[in-house]
Amino acid sequence: SLSSRFGRGEFNYGVSRFLTVGGGVEYLSSISNGAYIPFLTATFQPFSKLTLNAEYAQGVKTRGLLNYYFGKDILLELEYTKYKEGQLACIMNAPEERKARISIPFGYKMINGYVKLDYTQLVYKNFKYNQSSVMFSAYYKQFNVNSSTQLNWIDQRTPYVISDLALSYRMGNGYTLRPSAQYSVNSNTFSTYRVALEKYIPFGNVSLSYERNVPTNTNLVNVNLKYDLSFARTNISA
Image (tube, rainbow, N blue to C red; front, side, top):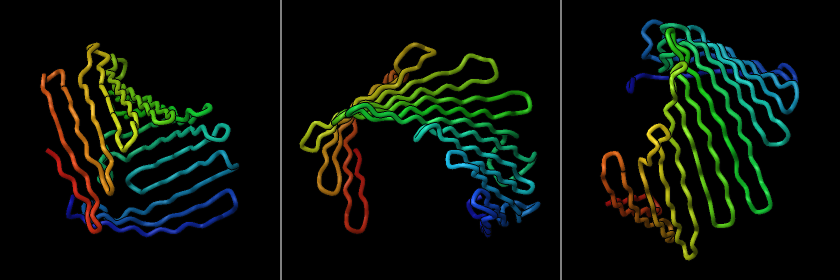
């Protein structure tokens, strides 16, 4: 709860160049049946490209994380968490959580960017809930493009898929044009369109934007001013 008290004490010990172990205790006053949570951690790095992390929190969870670099920059992350049934320390209803992520940076002449794939599976007693996303970002001179596609599905059912595309173009004299759109793959329609024009000023920026929401048939025009004072940040929107 918002009024609960939290405390944490821990230690770490380097057993060798490759292995570090640790432990400690957490205190969370909102847990009536066991406010103190002892935990153990371990990090094993047999070589520079591979790191294994393990964590055990009594009465709460067991977690493992693998990080592996392919080449210099491609990072693969695999994570598994098993929660103890009835635990109150984490806001998580699923007994198991499985994650896989891979990040692939790229560069060719004056073009730089990355591709990121993310997958999460929440394992419940009667079903499995899946989330997946593909992100792409690239930069070329004053141009920038960002694209993301999200998929959500339960067991073998048809996924719900939406895609977002955002562009930006630095026009000079402090102006930036930012068009974007969201597309629903299931209904084969665009759900929102948006275009914004930003002007950078000393210590802030001014922006004018227009957005259309297709499902609700609504239009929104917004003017926004952000300005950093010496003692505070201001944000005015209309």
